[in-house]
Image 1 (cartoon, chains in turn green, orange, brown, cyan):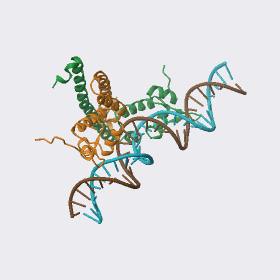
Image 2 (cartoon, protein in one colour):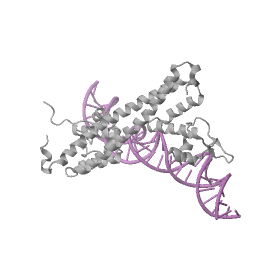
Image 3 (cartoon, each protein chain N blue to C red):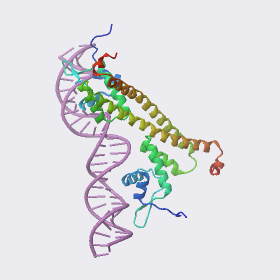
Image 4 (tube, rainbow over the protein chains, first blue to last red):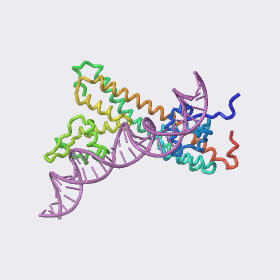
Length: 135
Length: 135
DNA sequence: TTAGGACCTAGAGTCGGCTCTAGATCAAGT
DNA sequence: ACTTGATCTAGAGCCGACTCTAGGTCCTAA
């Protein structure tokens, strides 16, 4: 049977999200936690699985280039609860377009890089004396 | 007939590469120009089309996430001239793999974002009273 | 009961990559 | 002759996102 109240320390959350404990505290101070993080008797942070899930989402949004202010904005919408789904959707759509654009730009860069790799492969495939004979 | 010595001021190069004049001087100081930038009688930088071409390549490498130290390394190889093509190729291949990995990661993030956009679209497509009725 | 380790806060430091400033020089137009 | 605007150098400043430090608290286990 699973625990009914699986509470996690900041260190455990760090391990599971791949974020450092510093970053977890930093994110909290930056307002990117949906719920205020609970504390135990000794003042230590107590997280639960929902927090881990939210932080996992945060890492994905960050990894795709969402700036912290936008992440905070999204967090605030979620924190306010039902009723602002249009705003959340608009924010996510904006970010989606941004990611699509990033991928497109990277693919354009990749084309050139692949081309240049090909050029050097050709150069190295033929004897040195041919180097300047390819127009 | 085209000019035989088309020389460009830093401002013109800035305009054509999209880099600021500050960035052009900064890149030069960081060692990412293949040839030392020539100067006119008054000490001003004089660029040519080759410089613009090189800087254009630099912007593409930077835009695809190559750090300045790697760009400098590549510049140095090119500056040394023929004979180090294997090294240039290795560097470019490493960068290519890095870009491929970036694109892959972004696509993974995109999957989640698209999924979440879909969730909110569904929520907004049905009456508010249904909000919690979808399992 | 004491040593170790995880945790706390507030605030400073780091890093990469620009971006800007101050004060000077220079070329061209009026 | 004078102003305007582009350029010069050296060096400071900025921004985002962490990352680390100092000095302290708290729990556990030998």
